[in-house]
View 1 (cartoon, helix red, strand yellow):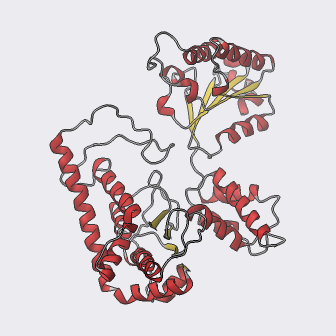
View 2 (cartoon, rainbow, N blue to C red):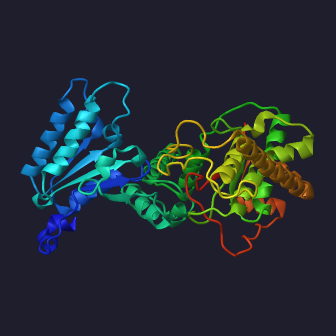
View 3 (tube, rainbow, N blue to C red):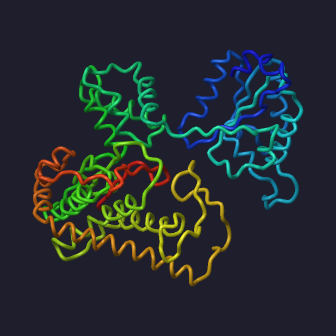
Length: 455
């Protein structure tokens, strides 16, 4: 931005400004907004186009549009060209099943040619955005093209508060609204999520006939977004009681297991596809996982099944989602994070893209790079972690059967309990932090919030 304002400050010593800058981040983090903000602050023309708009069925149209875009920018220089979703045309060449150069490759070739064809002294800078940087052609990323890469991460607590201030400018807020508190309880949410949160809160306040938006409206809107909308189901008292014990098992372990995330809310009201939900959130943004924290997550996830087995001595299908979560965490511990004494520090699964979410963007392809014997060891280690966690969950719940019964009765009566009500009903206190005195922290793809569902 400063180069566009006063280029002579940098060129007087023989330096040149970067031609291309690639913005990398998950969907909704504000890559396009950031590019527009740079152009606005610099006070220069802004030429924007989605990469998918270049490509048509007619051969040559994409390349022609690229030439026109760069010509217009040169004529208006200094200027910024912004290409959104660059991965739609910038994928590595040579992987197409069709012989010869495809229309997509011709368009990419034209972008490479144009970026080589102008000097940085012309005052044209090319910005591009993608959430799949691993798929881009290496020629795009070499020095002289998109050699500068800026990661646009999800906002931290302070960033979320500032984003909320922007989106609430035109929203009448009540005196009890605390945007700092809302920012603290929304780890992992990106700018698009926060905008949706404000909109849902405003709609909810209007539906309630209010003249302004209160803190409760924001909390209820967040609950709807995270846990899903409420459903109206007619259930027998036996089913309601079983769900109450299931969710109570999750909640009790959320209080008892050291390092576990605080339980924010537990409900037996059916939401989305779940018949009951226990919602836990961290007190701080997370960027790294200790092994103790991961094991605490698994123990908590298996608490619903453990409570059912202790109280009823039978099993239901309600733990399906919990089992999926626990298995996924355990498998990552073994195959990607070196948390297995048997297999030690060996990478046995591809690293996932932090910009696409769980299970996406693995860099390995084809057959697995290990033997059948190793595969059996992986399965055995995953089962061992799950078995030990299940036994720990059952032991803790059996020791605190009285608190579990009290919580189940309270859920049957009130249906939803927040953290303060949960502590009052059970008489428990939060488990201490981990032994090293540091609160465990984490980052996507394991997510900053966790939920345990029945159903």
